[in-house]
Image 1 (cartoon, rainbow, N blue to C red):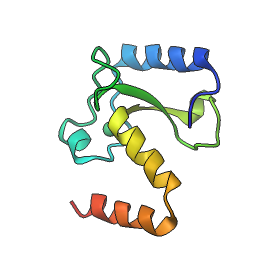
Image 2: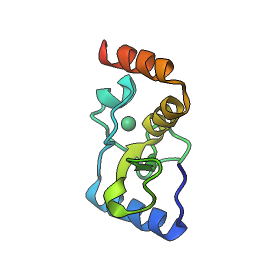
Image 3: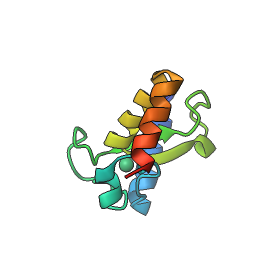
Length: 98
Ligand SMILES: [Zn+2]
């Protein structure tokens, strides 16, 4: 889910970078291997780049609904949310059985 407000998106990023907040999702093995470390200074196209994640995709830009995530996990999460329930379950099974 994209941000409704560019201003909130930017200020949230600044806040996370200041705190060096790690990825809250930890969905991928790569992310888990580096304990969710986010590369705030690197290229935005890097899998380890920062992305603001909406905890509830329909919850809007409220700060309580935002968490830091890496680009890779954020993409994995939105793929799972778009997928039918059985695919989400299969993905979850594969992730948790590692
Ligand atoms: Zn991650």
